[in-house]
Image (cartoon, rainbow, N blue to C red; front, side):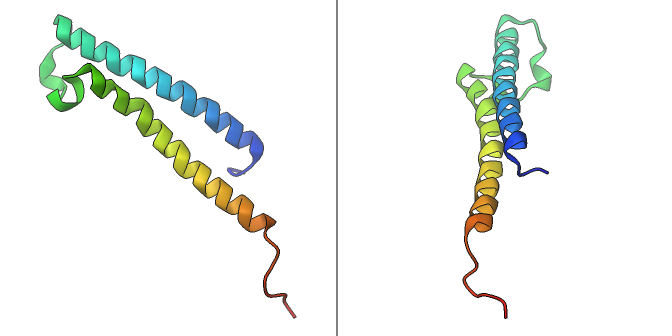
Length: 88
């Protein structure tokens, strides 16, 4: 169910769109804080003080996708590998 080619391609698109949207939202919050449109007491300075910190958001979603891809490829490899010890 979670390890089919169809699910993998949908998860790729979801990861792509999620990464792009979180980057845009994160960058917008940073610039709104710099322009004074948002109150900075609710946003930590280490995550929202520098525009380069907006790059953390898409890379976090890519990390989740890479873990999924690692599991997917491991399961695919195990299924394709012939049995070493035949059952008797």
